[in-house]
Image 1 (cartoon, protein in one colour):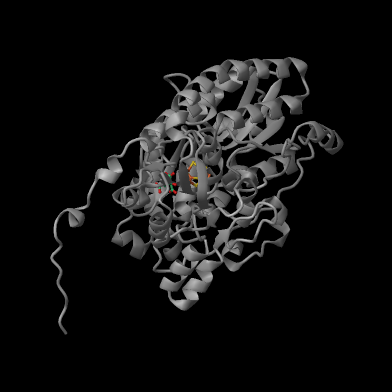
Image 2: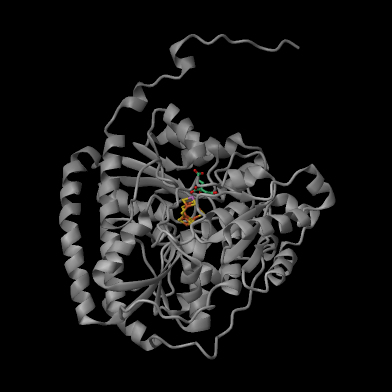
Length: 534
Ligand code: CFM
Ligand code: HCA
């Protein structure tokens, strides 16, 4: 590690180097060192990060099929967040609304930037209503909207009045620059979900006794479909997923569940907290990435509901699914065992996917998030010690109070403590990535492209996991890159069936020598060099 850190830090200007050094950590799972996270990227550094608008519109609200998401801004923002995340959806009937495949945008032009874009936004909303008559419309602000001062919230209110409050219309102040990354967008999205949707409908759908929410699962490559099937098999009613394969009604009825499971802690922990404060729904941390992790998560749910019948059913499902998992794993292990990986993804997958890799005997020697916070690395216990800076204060903090009429204590704190003696429920807890990584593993926040090059040069991992901006650079260096955002064209990777897909895809990638065979043009032919003569 020292070698890596010295080499990269030295290359940067002094001040930059000092700052970056605080985000490059030699892991120690026992002492959990402090890492610098969730701060501005230094200008000039090539970051993996995206923007606040992406986190709000693309990530959290994007997967909900029956809300019309209008991007108020120049067309590029809408265009580049149009289906690129591979979040899938499956309407239950043909008549059900599904707007996922559309891209709605006000397509702001120079004149709208100069004279204001509110009228164009109103017109866009009218057009959307005329064509689709949706139940709800979300308006997402891009950078210029904040710069010129268009008031999307006021426009939303006016338009709701124009339609006699029959259509739920609300705005998001999620301008790209509003926070330091996508993470700010998650928070803004969560606040608006709470204010405008959650708790709007008391209907208790479904007959099953055990009612849960799944938070932070976005149905990338069909992951939610796999999990829905597992819950169904176990006799568990999934009230709402935030927000894979979701509908407006799911959000509106989420408060009727009795347990929230948090998968991606970074993007949705706010909603878990809100549901607990307002309605008394406890939340536990789970991970459905990895077959063993999936079994563990299901056992937690069964333990929480304290029902022998459910426990038996869960064990039956695990045993049934694990037979195929074990067979698939055995078949590929000779190809994968002993290899090394590096994972640099958004805010949770760099942690979660380590489980799948370890099932293949692949060790993760370096990992980090693009935009995780310190608690995602060090665990929630550090929350009180995280300093709130100006960039965080820039994001609205809403006050959530107990809903006196509908708050219901599902389980006493004493009972949870008692259960936790038998099984680690991770109630209100996330232990973070560091505790699960080996001593000496490298942990790097907001990895830059330069640092990525150096990592590969120095440590030659057998597989590197990141996103589209990294993919081809890494492969040109002779190392296969698996996109852990959109799964390339693969997946699902969640649950038992997903684990099998992952085993096979990764075995193929690490056992081919194709990337090493490739030569860049300058490696094949002599390079003609030239120099400026002053
Ligand atoms: Fe959560 Fe996600 Fe992720 Fe994320 Fe994302 Fe994503 Fe991701 Mo891309 S919500 S933090 S903002 S698990 S879009 S589905 S893959 S960076 S690691
Ligand atoms: C986003 C979406 C993204 C991008 C992935 C990538 C995704 O952050 O806006 O960089 O390849 O998962 O699609 O994270």
